[in-house]
Image 1 (tube, helix red, strand yellow):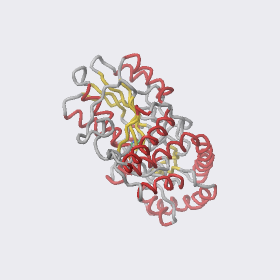
Image 2 (spheres, rainbow, N blue to C red):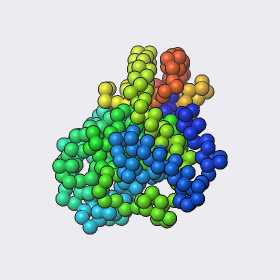
Image 3 (cartoon, rainbow, N blue to C red):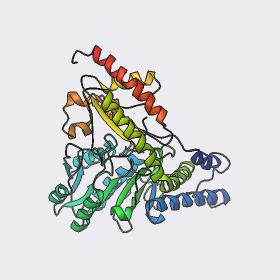
Image 4 (cartoon, rainbow, N blue to C red):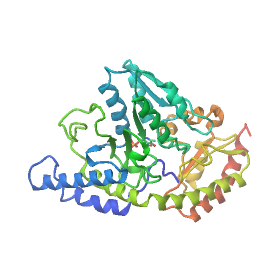
Amino acid sequence: MDHAATTPVHPAVAEAMLPYLGERFGNPSSVYTEGREARRAVEEARAKAAGALGADPSEIFFTSGGTEADNLAIIGVARALRDRGDHVITTAVEHHAVLEPCHFLEREGYRVTYLPVDGSGLVDPDEVRRAITPRTILVSVMHANNEVGTIQPVEEIAAVCREAGVYFHCDAVQTVGALEVNVDRLGVDLLSVSAHKLYGPKGVGCLYVRRGTEIESILLGGGQERSMRSGTENVAGIVGFGVAMELAGAEWRRRSEHVKSLRDRLIEGVLESIPRVRLNGHPERRLPNNANFIFDFIEGEAICLRLDFLGIAASTGSACSSERGEASHVLLALGIPPQKAHGSLRLTLGRENTEEDVDYLLENLPKVVEDLRALSPLA
Ligand code: PLP
C-alpha cells in the first residue's frame, strides 16, 4: 500500500525490456545493425510516451527519472533565460526534486517565491498571478502532491502563466497513469514524468518540452537526446517506459476507478473505527489512490514498522522525509503543527490491491494504533 513510493513493473513492460537486456544490446549511436535496432526501439518508445501525453515525439527528452526531469526543467530554463529575468515561482509543497534545484538557483543569485497552500494543500491561481513580476521567468507547480494527494488547479495556473508570458513547468510524476495528463489540455510548457510510478522500471522518465521553449542542457557530454541530455541512452529502461506510458494512456481511467473504490472504503473504515484521526489533503480533489491520515499521540514511523510486521507496506509520507526523520514540509505547509505532523500515515493503492487487502488493513490498524497509544505518554 505504498504505490506513491514506487510500483511493480507491469509484466508486459518487463517482457518488452528483456531483449534489450540480452541480445539487443546495441548503442543507439552506433551506425551498424545493432545500433540502428536500438535507435529504432528508443524512437518507438518516444512516440509512445508522446502519444500518452498528447505531445509530439520531438518534445520528449528521456531522463533518468522524475528528479532529473525536474532539475532540467528548472535549472535549464533559468539558465536559458538569465538575461531576461531572475525570478522563479513555485510552491511550499513541491517534491524535493523541485525544491532543491530552486534552492540551488537561490545560491546562484536567482530569487524564488515559495507560494503557500491552504489547509487542504491547494494553491490559489490568484496568488500565482500576484507573485508574477516582470523579472519572472518560470512557474513550477506540481499536478498532484505525492504525500497528501491534493490535485492542483493546473489548467488555471497555466492560463495565468500564459497570459503573463511566463513558462509553466508541472511535475506530473504522481498523476500519469492515474489522471488524464494531456499537455495541451493542461496548458503546460514543461512536464516531468517518472516510469517507476506508473508500472515501469526505476531510473528512467522524461521531460516534455513544448516546441520553441528556451531551455539549456544541464548534463554535458556526447550530445545524445538532441544535446538536451548527454549520456548513452538507457535503452531497456526507455523501452519499458514506452510500454508503461502506452498502458497508462489506455488504462488510467480503469485503474483510477479501481483504486478509488478501494481508497474510499479504506478512508471510511479508518475514520469510523479509530478515534482521534484526521484525513489530510483535499477531501475530493485528491489522487484516486491516496489516503493520508494523522493519528494523534503516536508516530507514523512506529505505525509503519508495526504494519510491516503484518506484511503491510506503508509510509509516513515521502520516502525522503522518512529518511531525514524531519516532520514533512508538506504537512507543515498545510498548517499542521510539527508534533502532530509526526503522526502521519500514507496509504497509496495500486492496480493489484484488492478489497481483501483493504479489509486486512482495517482489521489490523485499529489494534496497532491502540497498542501504540497505550505506550505513548502523550495519549
Ligand atoms: N516528483 C514527485 C512528485 C515524486 O513523487 C517523485 C518521487 O517520489 C519525484 C518527483 C522523483 O522522481 P524519481 O524517483 O523518478 O527521481
